[in-house]
Length: 329
Image (cartoon, rainbow, N blue to C red; front, top):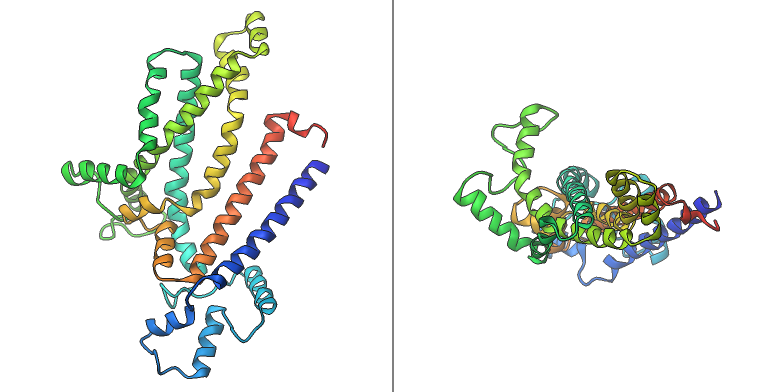
C-alpha cells in the first residue's frame, strides 16, 4: 500500500507540474491569439475595446488579470472541461475538436502500435531463441525500415499501393460519399480500408525496434543460471522459452510500450499529414501553423495526461509481472 501511495503522490506532483508548464508555454510564445482572431474575422482596426475584451474572455486570455488569477481560471476551466475556443476551427470549442479527432488517432495509431509490439515481441522471442536462423538474419532488414523517415516510407507506399496499383485510397479517413458515420458495417469497413495503408506505414517503421530489443534481451536472458536450472529439470523447450525466457526478457520492452501507448494520442503527425487522415496529429499541425494557442494547449494537456496515465499503469503492472519491484516498499 505504501508503494502505491508513493507512486500516486509522484504522479500527482508530475501532473501538477505538467499542467503548470502547459499554462505557461502559450503565454510565453510570441503573438497574440486575440489579434489572430480579429484578423481571421476581418475586423482588424474596427474592433472596440469592449469587443476585444469579449474576445479575450472567449479565448481565456484576459490580459487585465494577473497571472495568478489567470492560472486560477485555467485550473477551474480544466475541472469544468472548458478548454477554450479554437481559432483555427472557430467557433468550435477545443473540447469538441479533440473529441472529434481523438478517436481516429486512437484507432489508427493505437491499433498499429499494439500490432507492432505484439509482432515484434513474438518474432524477437523466436529470433533470440533460435540464434542464427533465417529469422535472426532478417533483423537487419527490419531495422533498416526503422531508420527510414516516416514521411518517405509513407510516400513510397502511397505511390505504389495508391497511385500505381490503386489498391488503397490516397487520402481521407473513410468514404464520404458511400459511408455514413456511425456504428454500422459499411462505415467500419470503410474506416478499416482507408486506415490500412497509414497503419502499414507505422507497423513497418516500428516493428524492427521491438524485434531487435526483444531478441537482444532473449540472448541475455538465456545465459542466466535459472535457465540452466529449468533445462536441468527437463522442462519442455516451449515452456522454458515462454515462462522463463520471454517473461523476463519482455520486462524492459513493457516500459517502452507504455511510453508508446502514452504518445498514441499525439498521433503520427507526418503520417496523418501525408494521408490527410482526420486525426489529432492533423489538428495539432493545423493549430501550430495557425498559432491556435488554445487548441495546442488542449492537445498538449491530453498528451500529458495519457503519458502519465500509461506510465502509472505500467508501474502498477510491473508489481504483478515482477514482484521484485515491490522490495523495500
